[in-house]
Image (tube, rainbow over the protein chains, first blue to last red):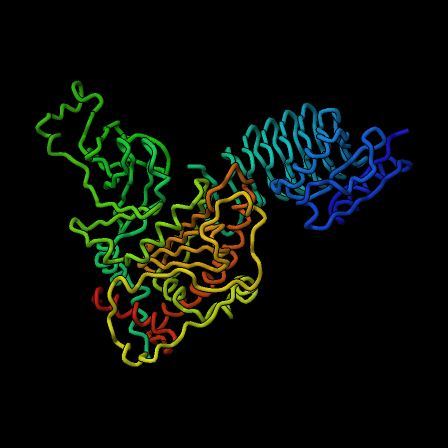
Length: 208
Length: 366
């Protein structure tokens, strides 16, 4: 009998995760814990209450954008308390090697993860996204609907790949980047670089 | 009263060239942050009045030179900023601290440029001044003292505020289709915010109209001192608490919950929208008649530890929303001034705009 699953997060994301889980394991006991916008920044986890790691698995459903670090911090806090974190993979997703997907990741319906894809923990892969073979996806990465990650590409931790973005083969995208404009990205990107509409050229964060 | 400016001032090549000669080649122009050039071999490049300039750290000190090799006129530094010795990428000529040619690869076997030839060869150097973390360059070989352009009180504030900048900086650029003077006039006008920014800036900042001086009639036609064109400080109260979520992690500048704003003539605007937790610098760089390139620097106050990149990125998005509102309005105005000779009308409360125009008109004779 699988452990009880407790989904904690913002209301819309909690509902989304719960819906996916009901398709995956219809008979599994699911408990929903909804946080307010401000709660997600209060990491005392007092709302964990009487939960015991041995009895349940958790899933953190916070901030769709991985660059917001609250999802990662809450994940780390709960891991520190000894909780196991679930992986949620939609039965309508195509994932060739599920064991290469890290904890607290969610793979939505219609997403495709080809062979030899390594996907870190805390990742979000939205509807219809395609990750070709040999890609390495970092931790806390958000990949938007319809995005394509070409063969052998690398996506750094806490990076957001927006809807409709295509990352060319073997391209390396650094940590804490955002690529929001749909279209082909064929150049490597340094850490903390942002591509968005309305700017002339990439926006960069540089430590001097 | 009618604006002192014919519309042609905002759009003709003649006006543009004269301003480049009489303003941008004569005044102290903001160039970069001190932290971008305070380590060995760090450099920043930009054009001032059409002159390519590099500020390069050589032997521990930032120095300003014309960014053109004395050999066959390649740019010495290509990127906007970085860390690289002052060596021409074309044929490897390298330069020393005074701009002298220090080494020519293949000279013995190929170029054969004699010492007597190289001893007279030096990069054109420019004067450089530093206020806190703000680096200014002046192209004039005999520049005015910077205290004539910025008052001592303003210099003190800029030094204090900028010395609290963190060293992690967000840098972005945007090209806009309007004359630099339009945005500067816009920034001197306290009335536009309640109309252009009612859904953005006005939600957080209580922007009051500047008081109209009793002697406003006497000010008409007056040409102010140069130092009167720059200033700022605590400008507006905040509508509600805007203490950011990262407040505990930074060494806030000051302790006043207010909107701070400094205008540095001719083309730099510095803001702290939340009482010293975050700063942004907008540098409006005229690149052609009716065209301006804006470089934006965003940074928090000094951070203890580290902050995620999302902090600066979210701040940039908020600032850009306000900036876009101004930019859209200025581009509309520019499109109109390009079509007709009608002069604008300036109200009494806009006397600071008149003062600016009077000074420019007295200096730049079109």
